Length: 511
Image: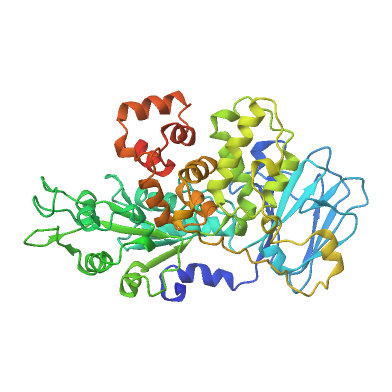
């Protein structure tokens, strides 16, 4: 694993992690959508928080505090009692207000350990308001960074780290599961840097043809290899004075890794077939969802890349942010216009209690499917929107019954989610590949996970598929016509063109 103690990023997180956390109550869902994301921050020691219609006051940084203020919320307060070991006891009021914990109705006091609060606990009041109980290790802050939403500690500190590193030329290594927003973080770093006047250059290292990878990255002189009829500038040349984003760095061909190390060490590289070196001023940002601390990756290169390391947490570790993410994604979804969202309380409860293996990307796709269903008058179930694995529902929680049955001193056991068994490529038909791409909105990593193959293997399947097309083989006119015809929706356009969504998105950004 990456040694975060030896990186510039680590003190920012570790010091806060060791302090006694503050108990936060964040609004995940409210009939007044503008209230989503407001918070009440309690103390960091033992005490009592009373939740009712009139208190406490929830607010956003710089805003005015407001009580929950809904008629369906009792004036008789529900109590959150924190003990000296950071355990929380939830004591429902004597009113008839329905109180739910992680989607299950409760009628008597419940105890939550400090570990359970670490994963976020979902409290429903009056079947109208959803709250998340979680720890905060920094005070709320208005530190916006384009594309990086969230009100919890992890989101706030990630934005601080982005601002911190954007003013430097240090290489950055972004670590996180697929769908956590690594490319968004890379673009934010570039946008906040002095290099923002030039476009960021992006390359997917897993998609490089190994025999031509050196020419793709470093360029080549005319005649350097068979078919090189003109000189090639290469991606390092294109990113001169700007930022070069190396996505899927863990899949870099072994022959290329020493060349990248040389660029990082001194900035020098040599185009294929050239007689002398060139010097690069490109700033490197790399990203991966893999563990690079292995024999399969050049460890000297890793040491250079990890000058500044950012870990982007999975959505299940920042459950308090689900409300603001849902709110934002609905606002930006053209299908959401004119759709009545007032009856979504139960569905959003299930959203908040799900572990989202595909993270924010998966959440966005599910919301698109939800909006399409609501548009035609259907009310889909959560199971119909998400292919639910039993291990993924409330895996960070315990049911109310289980909480009552076990000792409150024991930590929560989080079930291990086993990776799918790898399949042989020969066992997969073209129909299997096409179906997986369709079912995963034409996102390669998600389709690869469904098929049980590695991402590089998935690229091989796509390359040889008779129906799936590379974006560079489609004319610009066809791309733009199809994009407009499908409401400028990336995933629907990708499906119509039969080309991966990632490549289509990158093309449309620079076209």
